[in-house]
Length: 240
Image 1 (tube, rainbow, N blue to C red):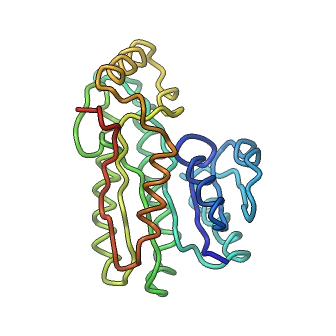
Image 2: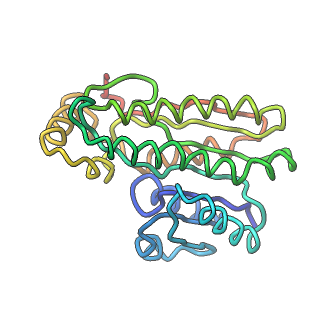
């Protein structure tokens, strides 16, 4: 049997696409999200689905240990869970800042913390953190979101430095605009309208979550000695 893959934010978008792709190739899975019914509806083989808030370290770790008892130690964790609440720094509700920083940064750190010790001991394993193109370049009305994703990019680089001497890969995936549910988190209708207009203007209409999932699987299935440290993936026509 192939080794255990853990995917957070697996109820939609990139997470769901990755779950289907890895399951098709026979990987045992632990799928985590708040909407457990969405994950269960996929009816994937050799899969445990659990309702988990990634900001809850105890609950997150408990689900991972449960899956490891059945399928063996985690060989890949994909810290994909995230939210995008776009807004202007001056006017956005600070509660939205905190929510993004908690999920997008603390959630990723929790996922890494849960698996790092075992991976170091085994001198093998892969951690893939989902950042964003907004984690490497700024965008208007993305202040707090950029802060969270620049945070993921930075902490991934730090973790890579800590884990690489132990033969553990730590990768950052930085998608551009892709049609997922992510924009639906934003509460400002004018910003949503403007974002969709921008997305069409730069041509970001053809790339799919499945394309991103294919990229993640490719990066993981390379030999352990090969690390695609940072991957920026966008629609070919996206020029910003």
